[in-house]
Length: 168
Image (cartoon, one colour):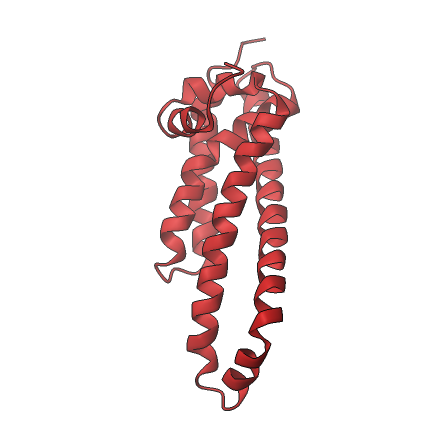
């Protein structure tokens, strides 16, 4: 299981809660690489939305579009770096909070598990919600609704995976 490729991890994270539960035993480095791939994808898509949205929004403000066009060479690299940092921060916070919810679920179901194991499970359970958020990113749905939908889907996936944790 240690030598699983990222593609195998991705496919198993989509359709196998039992394997998601087993991924709690993976080394943290493999889990972090997996999470950072999603962070990078989300950052790139958010950056694309930012650049296209900035041109659409700024065309109605006289002079701003000319100013932005003159500053593109410095604006876009910093915007991407800030997008990446913010995406990283938000995803890690969401995974950590949902892992705490997972710990509460484990306690309610009287199952054994450490927070670090639940965190790793949550990181893989967050795959489908990430894909849903990518799909909804361009739908025009508000960020609040996207967050609510993805959180609920993640809790469902996490619950399905946590039922494979050992009983006390």
